[in-house]
Image (tube, rainbow, N blue to C red; front, side, top):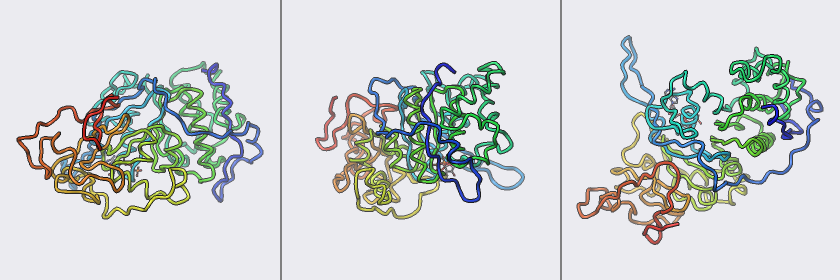
Length: 425
Ligand SMILES: Nc1ncnc2c1ncn2[C@@H]1O[C@H](COP(=O)(O)OP(=O)(O)OP(=O)(O)O)[C@@H](O)[C@H]1O
């Protein structure tokens, strides 16, 4: 690895640290080259998927109180999610708190064993792989956690935090561990001489860099970044995002980038999936999702971005206020899970679950009435393909189409909403 990990991805001007802390002095880390400006990441159309998730489900059991703790229900945290992450590319996963983003990330890293579905990594389904079988995989898929204050063991030095995976996986002879740790610290823009310091001696941004160095130790092919910058001061978020972008380019690491900040996701991810109550409601390339969202939930989410960030995602939008709370994932609404808060819901939405229908070359949406804001159709476009009438009742004259939920990835044909016909690429 040492031959390959000789990066110039250092970071300057480290972040302001939280009050009361005693982070390492500014000038001590200023030895690295300044960050260049970073343009938004672009997709490589030729890249094969390194990760393919299909119909992934995680149902957490809910137990009764008392001595005999029986299972009395399930939290349907993730319920039938499919997507792909290309080699060296990134997919963003967005949605409100509790929609199942972290659970999805934890299944992909196999911190959780999924209730059902497939997780194909480099072509191999790892959804049910045993703990023993997972060991080689742990090198390939790593996670960056949200909170740099709790994800690092305060009693261990940075050297042992970053070096531990090298020893556990016997990547380098023991004598070379320190040199490798220092190399990794340098790559993430920290002073390599600080390997013997403790996490509390660093600021929030610096700690997140330590977490990133630890994740890089085993040269992963895929990083699951779960809100990697949301705990950081706004002024340093961009620095850490730039660092991740540099690392991605230099080492061709793929990212599943989980965040609620739509502006950051837009910058980092050429493709984005929007989750609501355990399901993907819309998944699309950046341009389609941010400029032409078709699902009322995506439209509401995008409209709720604070003004200062609107410029980053395409200018000012009319704020759409959703009524009510997110329903419980223990007993989600019938049909479309978003219907209880949806401004355009009709009878069919309560009766029939909308398929995640492909409506563009790289655009899928799960709505009976998909369309740009203000242009939603009056009648459901999905009825006949699902074998039901406009109200969701079975319609013997309609022939249901099969294979509507097309699984991960995109097909070369799609349903053109305006022309109401299938179109070929
Ligand atoms: N270990 C668990 N046991 C039971 N329920 C869980 C568990 N972990 C998560 N949940 C529930 O699953 C649902 C999805 O949670 P998850 O943390 O994946 O959402 P999220 O979108 O990542 O939200 P956040 O951004 O707040 O972390 C929530 O209702 C949550 O309460």
